[in-house]
Image (cartoon, rainbow, N blue to C red):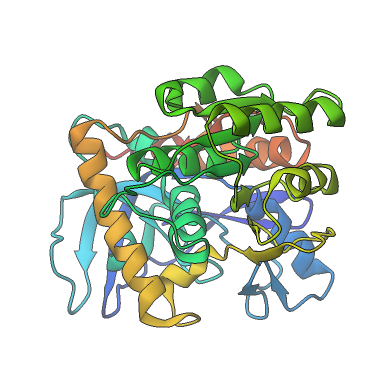
Length: 359
């Protein structure tokens, strides 16, 4: 089969490699659409420095070239021993286990059954492929690290939440999951993506958006105003997908003294007296944090199917990079150069020269 691998640069090449076999608990998926994430170009560059880990996952066995793809949507080809609920031909999306072999950038990929879910017929593979890693990362932040209410048991009292970087893919999914968990008010900090984020918020529950492109004093003033209008003076929880000092300084001005910030990457900032944590999405595959995190990943993955079916959950805006697997080169380059804003880059594997597209 054809597969794409990347090394520091980023430099992408398409290679021929054997089709893998699913082991116990795994599913072999014929990939129709694969997605990209910022870590896909960052991890090879960090590995090239000799570092042993990045964002909580090991780099020791990655090698110079690696298939970094973790977001995929396609058809079940084969199931491993012990897998229940899936059969060949099922339309599915999945998160591949980070830093492991047989990633999403290939004709066939391997995913654990616990982080695989069915795609309703009315949802495209492109939309579904925007979901896995980013939405599960948002779920780990809100429901595992911050211990907030989930869509399975929504909040029954006001729970203010600030999301810094709401326009990122992870941030936008955090907004969506908060809505379905009755977490309000959500105060979203964003920039160019404000029009999209506003469509996700519920003003009737005092949700609000703050434009970070203003000067710092105005950002802080707007945050305080949004909090005041919500009828509360206490905000304990924040999710920061950016991790820059200027954003953290604003959060320190408005969070309670016992407030907690969860970051999407290990912070290199001063959080002052606030407590903080870091989201490592790979905990849904364990065994780092045991059965609780794996169970969360399983239950939220299955909820994605229900959310799509009922229309309360949607994917992220996306842009298709042409050329199939060869489209990963411009996708990763654009991600590194900061040209991406508010969309997820995906590729249709069947567009790759030498590959027959799945129907």
